[in-house]
Length: 114
Image (cartoon, rainbow, N blue to C red):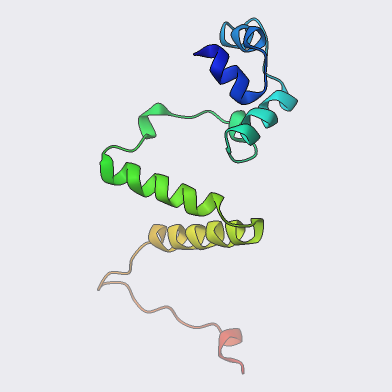
């Protein structure tokens, strides 16, 4: 199994075994190669990944797989636009919602200028 995975990554199985056993560090060049071969985003190997945040059910798994496939199929500019839209939506969701008791905001004089 390790040999097949090493072949897929374009690495020797011995080198991959050394990485697995913590005898060798991955290094930046090998990390980027692994990301490219596995079609992972640039820098993915540099971050910790929490196994507890994996999809909790089949619907979540389908959503994540579909969203990731769509994202990966887009050119760089479209990916950036998708990320911007998600950030914008998350920002709106994280803003406090006004309650009945909140008084309306008073516009500053600068906001009323044409």
